[in-house]
Image 1: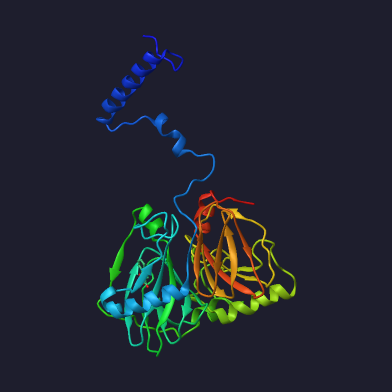
Image 2: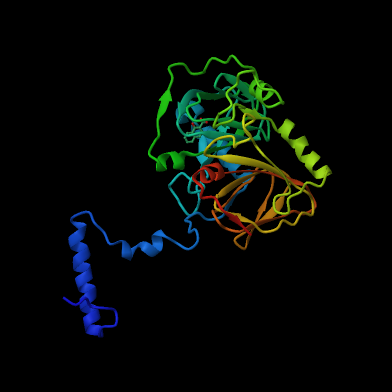
Length: 354
Ligand code: 1HN
């Protein structure tokens, strides 16, 4: 039988459409589908994303978070977190295609019980003093700008024996873990873990030029629990002083695993950038959708042609492969950023461009 082609008469074309549809209906009963109808959406010339650029203003988040403190206790909530939902993916508990982000509040006198899960977490401390997070036996004080990691399956609990509400940004690789459908979690009978390592122990032990003799030489996550802002910030000044400024990112450090120089976690990598007053960044894009938190100062980031004006503790997101560029006014700014770059690099799929 001759196969009808697209050059056929209008009547023949119509019959062909009907025949194709009848065929698709028939094969669907066998759990089969025609690739040729969907190929263009599956293999795109450039990345397509459902994620959109967005900015959360800290003064608004803070007010709404403190209201959450009135309606639910940390104990009832298990974790009192407001999810930063990407407006392109409402209801999906994600800020990018691969990352969860939220702001957590812990009130004076509260604790958040010890648990562990396969999803890895990072915390970037926004506001307040006097809280701690305990991770794998180390009790870490939380100060503005501290970067704290909670690796896959690491027991962790938080507490606030201080006098002020304390808020931080949580970023987890949960959408990645759930993409692989590999989520496990465990609760403990005790509320708090035993802590046998004092504040700052893992940083001093692993990240000051020596390693405990016999420390493993292969470790796919950093052994450092807290990278304190007080230690990181002066390094940015060193870079500035010697003119080591990237045209796109300013004076930027990458948080590293001191064992091998690799990323802090296999699924998430983070940076800290000093953008000096007057900085006009060159445009940049990369395949890793990136979450930014403002540690200091203010500025504007143009994302896909739209300006986003930010100030201290604001959070904003740049979708995968969308072009962005930082513009800084009269005040120095410091930006924390986090993305799934290490996961993409491990898979050999990460790309960057102008
Ligand atoms: C979690 O365990 C924490 O331990 C914070 O503080 C945010 C978001 C989703 C799933 C687990 C925490 C989380 C989370």
